[in-house]
Length: 309
Image (tube, rainbow, N blue to C red; front, top):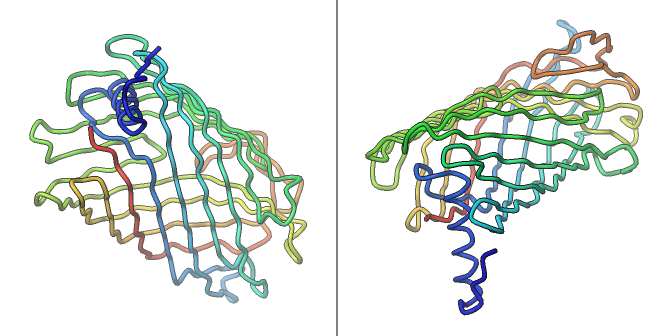
């Protein structure tokens, strides 16, 4: 156990984060992101119920992610936090824009198994719907992510993510690598197929880079004409960005141009498939009830509060 009774509360908190971070990320990644807000907008997205009857929609996503680490011992840390997302789009011609949400509680542990290997284990209960009625909103997921230190600049990443979506079970294996150059100008963090980035420092507080994000979400719909349906989001986005490291790299602001593949499919309640991965649903015989979203351009703005070690 770590007891620091003689320190003031703020100093104690900072020390706990420092100890936690050295356990979780190792020597190469010397920071912790405590809070992040993201706003994404694809203002013009064509939806095609049929080739002769397309209509135009938009996609707006707002996300707030928080993380709180608590050190228990030199090799064990408790992890918690709350994430919230809001998605707004017009799912079907003649419908008002739908606003759906997902709130996720994160709870778990990071364990340093030995000098090279550490593991993060999180339970992820969620409420995902338009919040008109929460009876069918509950989902539960989990992630196990391992990091193996190859050298002070590089770590190998592997693990898996699973969640009880409305259609059935989603399972995603994860494989990736983290690397930061010795001069700290180049940094990359890939967790394929879900997320990744690579960037290069142009100036003391300016970085240029590219990233990708691929996720699946399902939301129960309970309001008015949509009450007998749920929507399944398949989100693929690729972007180029400028990043500004402000206030001694405590506040990170990123402006990004996106090529988006946001597709909110509409299905009737009870439609299911036994198993799913990102983009692969064997045995899927569901009938889609709306048109497919076409690829579109968009933009993203994010602000992160980062604790530097």
